[in-house]
Amino acid sequence: MKKICFLTDSVFNIGGVQRCVTVVANELIALGYDVSIICLDRYPIDYKLYNLSKNVNIKFIYNEENDKIKFFWAKVFRKLNRTKGFFSKNEKLLERIYYTYCKNRNFELVKYIEKNNFDVVIGAGGDLSVLLAILKNQITAKTYGWQHSSCDSYFVRNDGKFHYQVSLFKKYIPKLDKYIVLTKYDSNWIKEQFGYSANCIYNPKSFYTNKISDLKEKNFIAVGRYDKVKGFDRLITAFSKFVKKDSSWKLYIIGEGKMYKKLKEQIRSLSLENNVFLISKTNNIIHYYLKSSIYLLSSYYEGLPMVLIEACECGLPIISYDLPCCKEQFNNCSLLISNGNIDAFADAMYKLTHDAHLLHKLGKEAKINSNKYDISKIMKEWMKIL
Image (tube, helix red, strand yellow):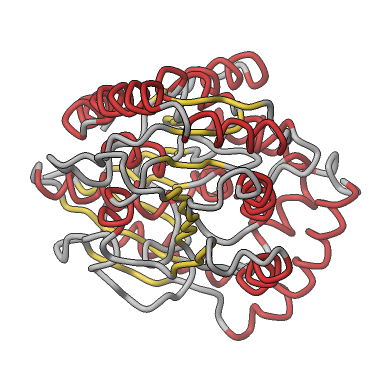
């Protein structure tokens, strides 16, 4: 029996990474693997949130008390680097402030991995992929990285999460045994920029349903954490323009996060309290999809959004900004708008809500599109590399 371990921040909070890791972990359990997940953030264990199998072993390894001072200074230097790129060319300092400052945690991490004799350890996310690569010489298991957002959002955008860590990624990603990306676009980018052949494996569906939306309810839906990158503030602005033409529709934004109060105030200031609703995380997300008629993706960037795969499974047409992943994966079932054009986004909302033929055509294509994310197809790709 092979032993697989995922390294992640958490699988017990809202996010596409959490859903995706859960689905793959559950399927590996069903296939007879021994599966563990190491969480570096302590969230209350909630197996029901994404129906995580209780046969998955959970281990928390987080910052000990005596690392908190180092963590404080690491955060200060990170902020300086992320906003100004002060240390972008100093690889040793980058390693220190992002990955090796927390010696106790890293020691416990390696100790746990070695004690359990895992065959493969998979870092879920760019930062945890690099961390594994840095620690690789201390780990007997094979080490894989699993990128969960696009290369544009990681490296290209000035505000990208790892824009000022490109030199570290270029140095360490090739040290991993495998590096997994979500789209062909990203695989090509990694090859061109890092000279490394990454594996492309799509995210799988997080659920299956025989039901599809009848597209009769006048409800838009958006799902995700209340964070700037999800663009819910610009979505609400677009919706406010739409309701000036048609006030009969409602918008449900399902999630949680640090922008909740700001979004709530924006809704109030635009007098949209009767049209826009912020719904906290739910264990029955399918209900909301099936009661909606259009999915709205307002993100500034994405990798391969689980929410769009879920929307397709429920037969929902999509309106989205033209992110690379959307152009590659969802072009046939969506209206794609130039990223940041809020007026055009609002116009697309009006167009799709008032063209029943187009609405149902895109909904039908969405359900067909969902077939390529079947877990059986996705796991065949995983089996090739595990």
